[in-house]
Length: 347
Ligand SMILES: [Zn+2]
Image (cartoon, rainbow, N blue to C red; front, side):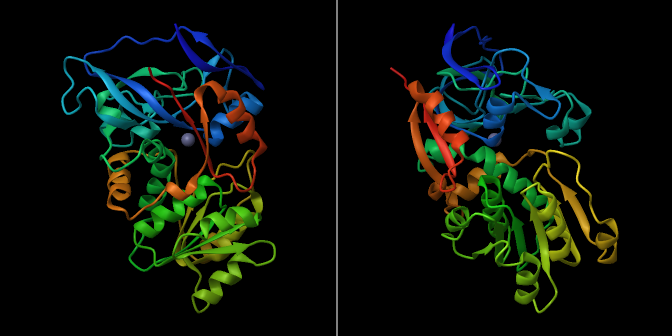
């Protein structure tokens, strides 16, 4: 039995003992979790009890953006030792699957992802994870930053899918945590400037603290015209759509340059119309993003190099004992909050 933050059903959390499988396999490590960030998906399961086809039908431990310290290693583990500071990819694919063999293990239909029903998450003092999906953190990268590698990896995946060329000008629609992560990854990936559009001024203010990220406040300013003005009428080389709203999906197609690229990152709750002819008339390329594959080591390298600084995104820290309060704070969705972290305690 272990104490954990359990989502019993929609809108009901408890901090209680629960039986969690924790057998250490030959290629697994045991980790004392240190920091877990609350993700939009955790909050959505809390408020709605489901995301699309994933429905919480039984009590489930929340949390999937985590870092910690290795406390035990399986007999066949190499490259990780007890005491190593690490962060973990929360998705465990079947390494023999066709998707894994193709290098696209993020779309393996049998992937088991923390805190996606029926798989338990990591808001509990310790857990077992495959060493192959556990990554060492350099000494100067904090646990807080390490746990943020998970959402940043989505930004990395988006930047990689865009095939950015040095000097590209990009637009990000939506300045939530993922929008900001995408903007940072796009700059690190070679964009000269990244414009970011949102309806909420406080969110834009967080993004605008970074060099070369330019805020666009809608509806005061029109993102497509701002991009045209900035590019002699040409448009954005890349648009990363991170809001998942019908209006911003329309904006993405309007703002993208001829022969440019739109990357669909945000997930609309319901199907939305897309103007295919507008896309065809510019012969744009469209890419989609679902989580990430093979991005953790690259994300850690960028953070360690100082090229990407995630520290300004840390909004508030709660103790594990106050996890439910932390989630209620996340539900409030204060415009000045970017990321809320929970610190686990160890004797
Ligand atoms: Zn997440």
